[in-house]
Image 1 (tube, one colour):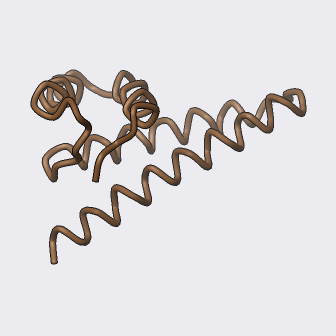
Image 2: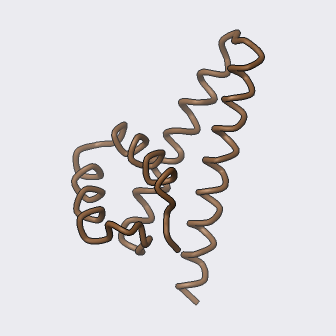
Length: 96
């Protein structure tokens, strides 16, 4: 599986919220796989980044926002879930 450029940006933003060890591992992976091919070693980092992003978006949704902003937040959550699902599916298939 390959992460799209948009998915790479989303995950990178999530990784920026993680600890230094995760950031360093993500940077090494991006250097090794600039085309976005997901490897088993980076999957836990992607998972943690997406969980962190989901929490951030859900927290943002708790405050009153405009209808347009609420739609953006729903779209963000949907995209995060789609990436997460694809990564988990890929890992399950490679572990068979």
